[in-house]
Length: 226
Ligand SMILES: [Zn+2]
Image 1: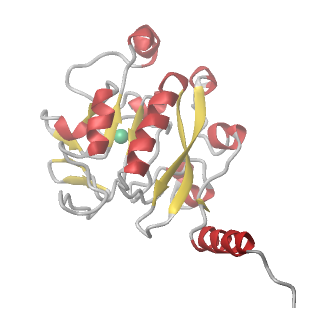
Image 2: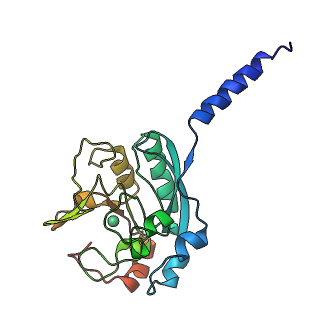
Image 3: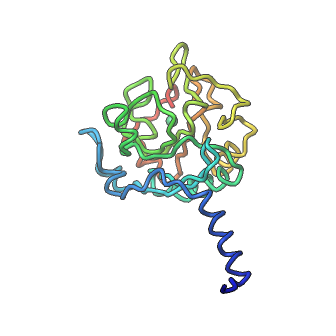
């Protein structure tokens, strides 16, 4: 019988180990699909042009490594890459990170605009939750992380419906968590710090100085709305 060299056994073992914990691909849309498909009729082409698709890796609640995608304004792409490095290295679990155009999000409601979600996403063409003006998400300047663990609340309104904020639960953001710190160090504002009526634990937004006049073209400043 032929003797199999030791190094081949090592290689076989390595392949078996990799095979046991494969990378789960949650989302692999093209830029065209992620940014231009399943959009409401009033969507803005100038804004869409400035969006990019960032591939991100994270551990899921199943303990496996996943790859998803975040649609975000081009000036924030590096921030998102770096912050998801912190998310992955600190093993902060993410339920999913799918663009709003992904079929699994679209099946939940028209244009994927379902309040009952546990998806982490950046760009979505919609107004603010309570109000008529455009959300920072519509400009690609905001991201929500694990909505079900980190709900939005304003009075009796809770999004997603029935969600509860339990700081000790996995995937929950607190002021001390490495993920919140990473966002803050990169200059992002956290909705968990809001004090004027609403609190939005899932939400981070950033307005780079060079985009201020671009943003006021679409979104008149108002001290009372986020
Ligand atoms: Zn948000």
